[in-house]
Length: 350
Image 1: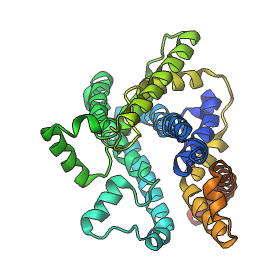
Image 2: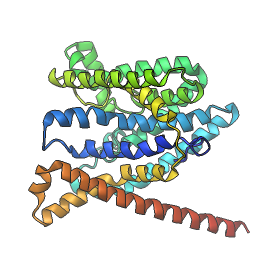
Image 3: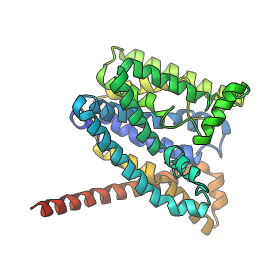
Image 4: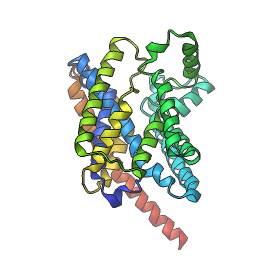
């Protein structure tokens, strides 16, 4: 997706960090430290790595959602254009992964399962983000439009808190019958509370709020706040894991605070914009599971399957390299196709 303000204001560090965030997403799906240390894998991959998706949501809130709110009359139209763009992308990438889903036996076996995958879980394990963004942007826009920034933020925070107890803190509430019943009902419609209702709105609205409400913090307070909140979150990661509370591990109490300080700090670093990082990071996210499948298949053919399973950091680096190469090629071909399509439209209009 194209950012509305990044070009003119030159938030280059946000563009560059997209690549780092894409690398963290690849790490979550490959477990680079799992062959070295389970503790390191927990802290780095499933602790620090969890900043990646909220970062992309905040970027969307900062550049896209805030732009929708600038003019009341055009906001709905801009929302619909964005939703159509994301839906088309979601359907196309679903078709791309359909053969892999069929081969692996992960196709839904009922009509309810189809809707559950399409609306919340994603049609492949990494694609939950797209329906999450589609629903999250619509929910966030409506809350901001009709409730205002402050009330919308409070509602989003409450939704996140509900989601938190269905994620990393599930073990703390599952012994309470009314709450267990509530979450069991919830999980019939969505396998996780990490979705467009409970997870995405808080980070989208936080990004939009930072776009319209500049902070008065000093550089020292931002750095200290980031390090302190990150340390607290990592303690939280360890605690919820040790207590056996985690049903999943995407949502933590201190994660929004970490993202606030991180995003503010990155947006303050004066660098020119790097639009190419946007498309490449998007393609890395979309294509890296195919690269994982390809490398594992190749490892099996060459008799190196055990090597890849043992040396997980090497496997991660190989996936990153292959994903980056595929992303650069896909971005190049995408731009060429857009250029040819524009030329064709001009000829038709003439």
